[in-house]
Image (tube, rainbow, N blue to C red; front, side):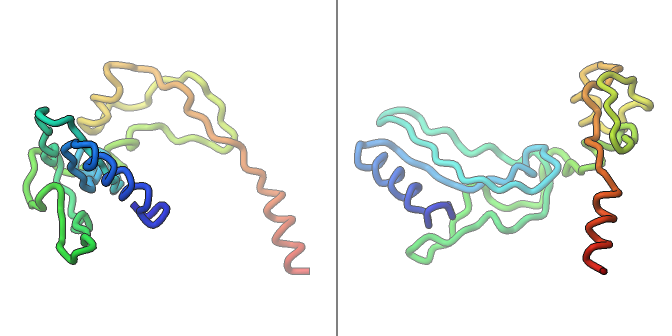
Length: 156
C-alpha cells in the first residue's frame, strides 16, 4: 500500500465498491502460515453481490509480530486477523527450512548430489517428499583476487 502513496489501492477499492462489490482488505504476514520469515502483504478480497466473502485464514504458526495493525485515514486501527499468542504450530525458522542442506563451496556446480543427512524438521521432511537426491545445489564463484585489487587500489 506504500506504492504510489496508496493511490492504486484506493482507486481499486473505490471502483469495486462503486460497482456494487463487497470488499475486504487486510495485511497478512506469511510467517503466520509456515514461511520462515516475516513477509507482510496487503490483500484485497472482492465478491459480487450475493456471493459469500471468505474469512481470513487463521494463523497456523506462532510468530511474534505486532505490526499487522495499520491506521485508517479516519484514525481507526485495523487488523485483518486478530493478534493472538496461540496457533497450532510453532514458527518455522530458517534452520527448519535449510538446516539439512550440505555445505556448498565457492564455485560448486554439483547439479545432482545425495543429501548427507536425514531431515531435521517437519518442514524439511515435507519439502523433500521422500527425495534422497538434491538438485541444483550450486554457488556462483566469487573471485577474491578482484576484491583484493579493489581494496588495494583504495589504499594506494
